[in-house]
Image 1: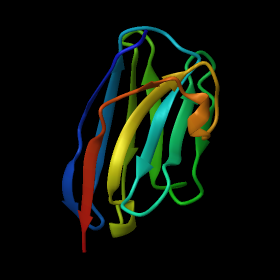
Image 2: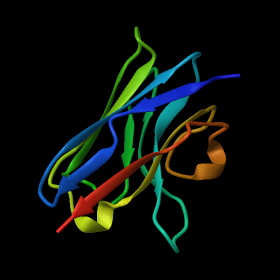
Image 3: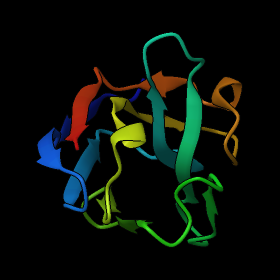
Image 4: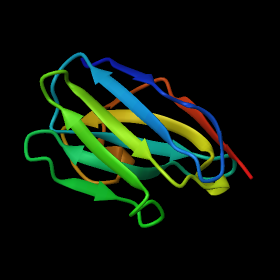
Length: 119
């Protein structure tokens, strides 16, 4: 079992930045971030293969968000720049044996952290 501890959520103005962190208690093939806004399905935002560093991004965040990892700390980060109101959602850290942006590939989930972007 892997436990995930998230931090970094908050409220910012449009155009601002936030950095999310997720520390894992164990190792998995992939880690990343998903989000869910009211009335919408959970969607993959950005994920990374822990060993190779290969990344996957949703089209809606490419060029604005960057995912990275520190394997020594078993931690992944999501740097979110140029935030838009449509980025407002509950953000969840996830880890698991798969890869990519499909939520079903991930076995372990964090508690979620709210990101709110106001205009």
